[in-house]
Image (tube, rainbow, N blue to C red; front, side, top):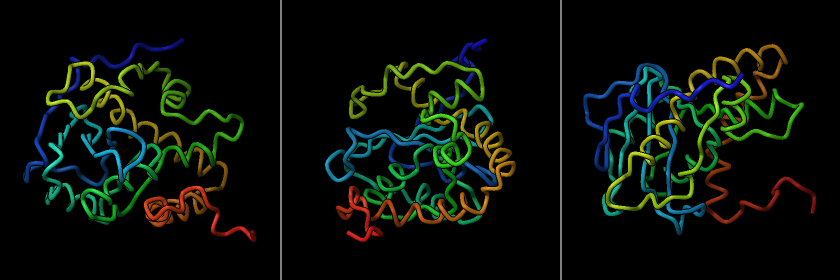
Length: 214
């Protein structure tokens, strides 16, 4: 039976402009996602970064398109002692690198972990993962909305929050499956390579297999 999605009213959402406040602490792990104007980082600007420690509090950082210095967020991303949990990290860390100029350290990608463990399916989207592993049906209606608007609608805030609020729970389940299937080392090496893969994407090598003979 599909559970009802966590109510937006049950989450504590904090809106910030262009950076995190200096007093925000995320412990040893943080779930992160980004929203952009499209799927091409060099063309489509970064509009929003959402983060949560997994405690029901979601921080939404809205960028105005002019100031991407974000020293507090950058410091968090570069901190090797804090695990950053993404879904499809390849895209997010490329966007963050292009706009903030920082390489994200200690990355964990639930999509890669899913592909390494859920080999019985080709459905590895966040909606699919949350549905199967947590029994929750995500509403992705706001995925293609205008994230560059001056004000975020309540629906956009809810969508952005739901993109990170379940990542800690997914990681716990996927960690057990990686261990069960004996693919933890493979996952770790894949996560380490992600920053290089993201830079290759930005440099125009996204569709090329540089390891192939041809």
